Image (cartoon, rainbow, N blue to C red; front, side, top):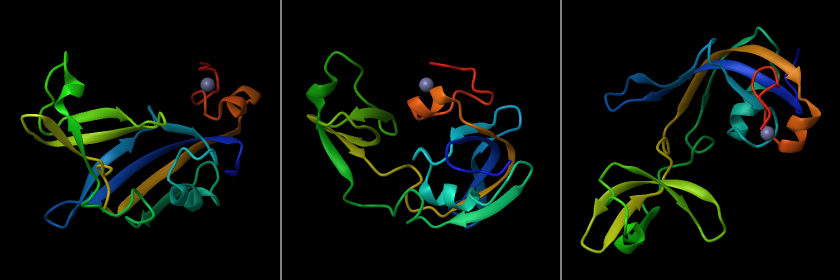
Length: 166
Ligand SMILES: [Zn+2]
């Protein structure tokens, strides 16, 4: 079956990014046993990732590169936030390198990695961990099926066979 909006796609992928020595290293993957399953065209994936898959069908393999700009964005030196240490009262003081789940005033969830901790504040880097990276994807389309009415209502896939309702 061909990949189209309102269809659920299951695929394998290996994501390679450039390492400090210039060679590509495997950053993430999804296997045949634990594929990535998602509702195509629902805005859950990088738009360019879906665009590259849009001509494929079950059984096809793929191999493409997405620029940093069309992936997780360029690295932004100014994307740091200074959080008052008081926010963490009653919990453990964040450690450098720790990734914190955060939420803005509009309820949008995002993550920040702690880059330093001072006497009264915690400074977090808000760049996506893969910001500034060219993304090299390789994989295979394992299955494409029409989404169930429930999946379309929820706006996400309910697992490879649509039975994992929630
Ligand atoms: Zn659901």
